[in-house]
Length: 173
Image (tube, rainbow, N blue to C red; front, side, top):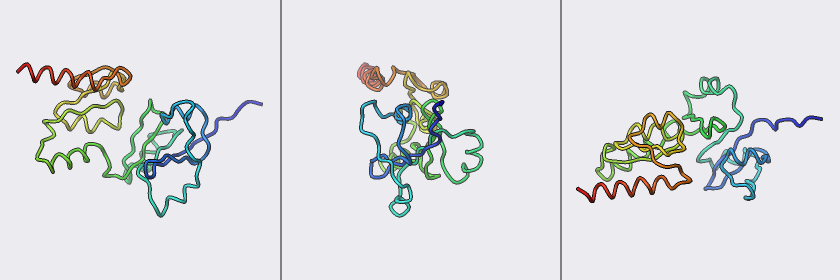
């Protein structure tokens, strides 16, 4: 008998802990960025979060994505990440660029003065809003196209590489 695909799942983050709607396969661990051999997230009844809330909802195996966005994009901020294998569903106002703008405004710093780093679609608005957008070497092409610079990959310490370049260039002035 052929093995069946396990079907869609979703995960939620609550108090920095990941919970899933069902036990996950090793491939789905990888989609969520969980290293092999790590402890599995708890498969939980998702109704338990209706009173306490969640900080993020992650969905796997959404197809077709465009239909999902058409149905729910007016109510939620929806971003596809991880090579299109994962969908992040957040409050409409929740995005990295909005958070950065609010924080910087409190300190009197303009977004044009800020460098931001990103590697996936959930970083796109932030990179478009800041003055020095830096894409990681492993970034999706759209981020690389929007970037001021492209640095090394996450695995090659790309943030540190770029920060060292910033420090060297500013100390040379």
